[in-house]
Image (tube, rainbow, N blue to C red):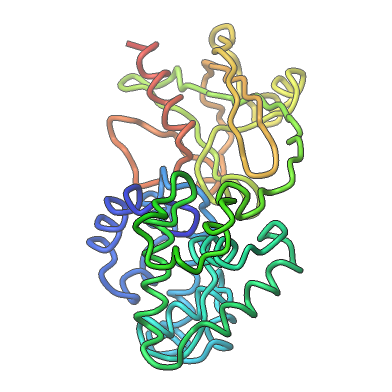
Amino acid sequence: MLQQTQVKTVIPYYLKFMQRFPTVTALAKAPQDDVLHLWTGLGYYARARNLHRTARIITKEHSAQLPDSSEGLQELPGIGRSTAGAILSLAKAQHHPILDGNVKRILCRYFRVQGWSGHSKTQKILWSLAENITPAKHCDKFNQAMMDLGSSLCSRTRPQCIHCPLNKTCEAYLHQELTAYPNPKPKKDKPVKSAYLLMLTNENSTSDLEILLEKRPEQGIWGSLWSFPQCETINEIEQWLDKHYYELHEEKQFFPEFRHTFSHYHLQITPVKIPVKIPSQIMDDNHFIWFNRKKPLKLGMPTPIKNLISQLADTSI
């Protein structure tokens, strides 16, 4: 959960997650939707899918015990060299360096490392430095201290160098070049894509508002989460409705468009409310569901979708 996410954001999610899944076996037995439901709002949902897959693998193949080697850990979904090193050093006191975002920042400043830390050449330099400075004894305490230092005094913005125990030998501090390190990621304009989200409402329902949700493919944005059906162009909306045998009950209603930013592009979203009558054809129950906000299911949903469902409910009062 802490990968690319701040501690203060993670804590409430972590507490709920551990209460629901106190053991690896409990996590392995849980449906994926339960896992993604508790992850909703944290983002980077591949982490949740990988964690769930890893729990199932080690329960089935390793008697619910994590491998005790870096090579064995890195064979599991979502675990790379740094995560493996953190697990083995902190949990088993093995001698392994780590290189998370906090450690990268400290090394880049302390040694004035040139180049963006995401480049392979820079990564190689940073790994070499991490290997050289990580002590064989008390490696667990050293790695924890490095992560804590990076998240507190040597923070990304407004580092508190005057209180840092390394300030007498830190190259960036001695040269008064703190803002230059780590070197920023080279700027690259993100492309902008467009999409229409089809918010189908069940006009056959005699009780509460029912909204159609579709489970997204595992690969791609919002993987395995429940969202609205999506079309790239306005002309595709009618084609989608015809393909799934939906008949309009009232005219479509276009909601204000908004932009949602992913790691590699911006998505300009236009939500469309589409009141329909339920078709007589049987739908794939594993792929589509009619969601009732007053009778919620445990589903993983992107935050923009949760917000749109709330807007739909408000407009239907």
